[in-house]
Image 1 (cartoon, rainbow, N blue to C red):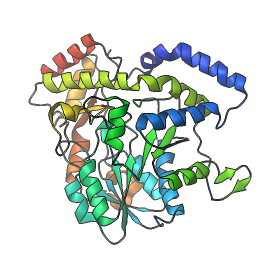
Image 2 (cartoon, rainbow, N blue to C red):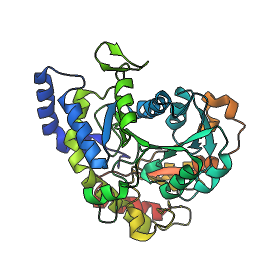
Image 3 (cartoon, helix red, strand yellow):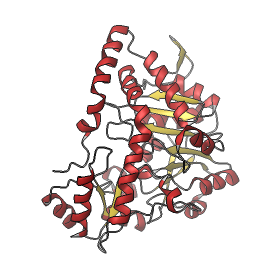
Length: 382
């Protein structure tokens, strides 16, 4: 059986280093906001090319704390509208609601699954104060167009990068290229998740906020720790959402290999894109506005490789019978969830089509060449 995602196999190369880190953390006697968290925050900020990284409990908290930080700074107010993709994991929308803000859903492009910049403009009102961009499945949204819209309309741009560790890359990749690509990103903030299945996954929950905004960083550092900068002195009504010292230690072990593992994902994706040839299967469009060909591959870190088909259940069962596990990301659109009964009558036809047709193929840095050969062969025979 080819597993959809073999976490045990992914983490096996790190087991010895994990044991060393576990022993070091135990012997340190310091388990909350210690040296490992400080080191990871510094390392991940440098990797992302940003001034600040604040480790938090999980990716959802990262989003909520960004919104609450902006509220605390007076840049957002409760009741403000935030534009968000209709096609996303529900956590993106829940984070907006958790911060007492109002989500305004916008359809994606069918080809890329990401929010359609051309449709954002028609949803902007006097109450719109921010855009929450989601880099779904690991593909960067069309940030040039979105940032231009935000600039012209005085909107804050917040990025849900929970599935996009390692983006963006210039064609050559590497830290210098990444820093160059991020020079224009002077404000805003990104939220990351280190859930075990992510490209950079911990052995439990974890998350982070990255930003170049000094004031926002300082507020979020306090908000994650009961609103306290100095122990027992509370400046804000905060929460307890701190990246665990042990998870930070594990992430410090894995971070140096993230680029190499993402490169393997891209090579597998390149094979899927060029070698899967079946009229019943629709491959993702790996492109951004103004970007095409090999450069486009660097805008996607392939957390997931998602195809579409009109007979999803049939295809999924066919693959399973042939020993290939798949998953659906995601089977029910947010506006159709029971939790949002008031939205159930809303119509987002592109989002609904995507949720009815998508199927995620195995994608990980531990897939073998033979396994990829087999997956492609079975799909082409469908």
